[in-house]
Image 1 (cartoon, each protein chain N blue to C red):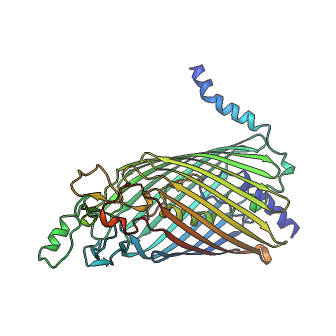
Image 2 (cartoon, each protein chain N blue to C red):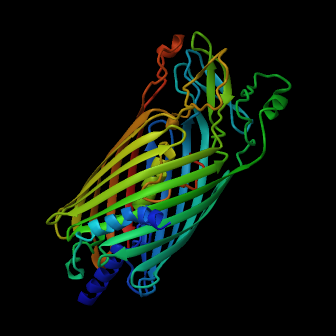
Image 3 (cartoon, one colour):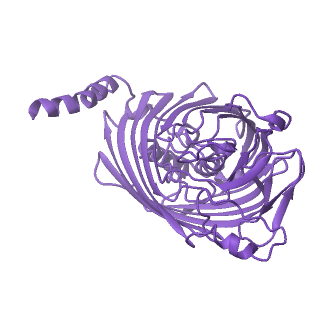
Length: 73
Length: 427
């Protein structure tokens, strides 16, 4: 059981310890805090794009939930 | 003014470390106690096919302590024609409208288009986000959309945890959706032959024999797991894995498949049939880097499902700062998809029917390229105006091998071209 838990959480621990060498101090975040540096900087446009491509292509989701809520596909 | 600016940075910081699930995320940066509005009108126009006008208004209120409420309303008005799946022929072809009332005809050598495509859709969504404590945040949302023959309800929840001075965020989200389709003229019985009105007395009886229930449903369970990492003071990236399980009526009631003879001429049109479940998965990676004044945004998605579709999507944007107040953002997107196992451009007369078949070009082997540009300008009082113009070209590839007779002389895989124009105003 303990081994199973270790195996399950090892990738997470490795990932987090790997990530811990990256990053910045809180006072170094002025650039990251800009609206244009948000991963979804224009949610309205992203939503419209997702709707277009959901209705024209065979794939959906990835960034967020794949469900489309429309009868277009 | 300076105070306002600092406040805005604080809220942007919140957004930066906030959960990154779903594009309905409350990324808008409202001042505490105020509503902030993002509005847009999208015009989407395909050459000879669909036109859509889509106005959106999204309102976000900051309740302080990183508690945010977002409400979004989208209208969608669609008109035009859509490929019904049938192959072109060297003769004009007549098809019965989905309602059974009347018919439409396509000219010789033209891709058959159902010109009854018309719908208005209203979608309303609401999302709440708040911290639980210093490291954990949560969010909940509901979505509702309705159109003439389709209704969708969904609810979602997400949880995220910050690590390493909020440089690393792990998140998990769950969404449950319930959709109902009730097409005019009822749902066609899969693989039944389209009844064509050629003046016979019992056409209505023939048509009714192809109809099943008045409505059907589908359930969707979506799961998204995300990792967001601040790399350095100018770079942030995200990796996410999505899993989606859909069960229920997944067939398109308006699509048919031609059955052709040895000469490639149609002898029958069958209503298509898709499996009643679909399992979709994807891996998505996005990186954003701030140069001295410009920003580059790159993302890649690998998608696969149990229908046999795999796809690659690459998206690149470069926000080129023109001055203190304006920017130009060129955009390129490339999409490449393999066909579904049951995609058949047509069926051959005399062959036994497969378990499932669809000639919907969106399930075929295709690629799409989008090129465009956005221009944005900051106005007084933190308002922003932007314009976006894009061109989308979708091309299908022939995977049928040898084609019978006249099908060699017609365009079985026509391109789809569209113009996307959007005006946005944030205030």
